[in-house]
Image 1 (cartoon, one colour):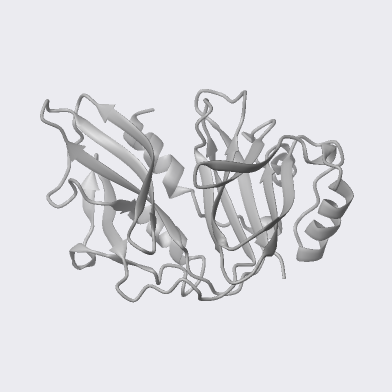
Image 2 (tube, rainbow, N blue to C red; image 1 turned 45 degrees about the vertical axis):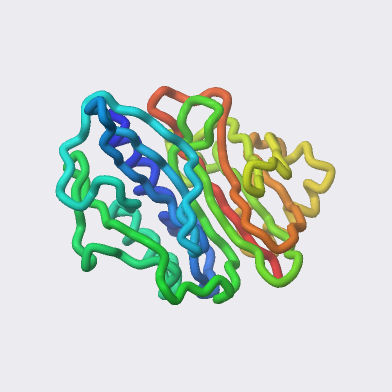
Length: 266
């Protein structure tokens, strides 16, 4: 799989909601961070690809950098701009009417193309607001790739007061819903910036496993079987910006599917 198709598969799925038994209602909210990419031509003819999280203040935090010897076929206006694939943009819109209100499409809303894939150039909205709505549930289904660098990441923001948060990285239990390529043993990490705050491998090994299961049932999340290798955390966090990521020690070269869920509790 080429780097560009890898990127498409990762972010095209990043915030797609699971349907049926995997779905849960959410109060309208605004995304604080948006996964983006930037392609830059270098003097030696190669291309630098940066993957980043662009926040509502217009600040981009680069999470990965790759250099590609053969530049992709790129339309005018795509170079050196923060981009979101059109597939991902419309998936974000499915999160709610206000989900993308902190961001806007540039270039008069017209798409550009990179390696035949349509993207939008994006930036922060001039009237971005960070305190709109309360996120109840964000479900992120995506592909976990080999290696220690996370390829499935969800960002969330807590404002005003401390909040309890239930975070789950579901892998093997997805098989009960017909997912045939699920991650066998996901590992869940919660960070603030570059600081690792919490992590978990198997949810049932936690001393608060019974409380975790009770809270999951209370918010309407499907149950995780006792002894499963799914990962989960129930934590209390102060106001701030956070990321939750899913990795795995053993996955196929093509990657495997996991579901990342983030519940901000009342």
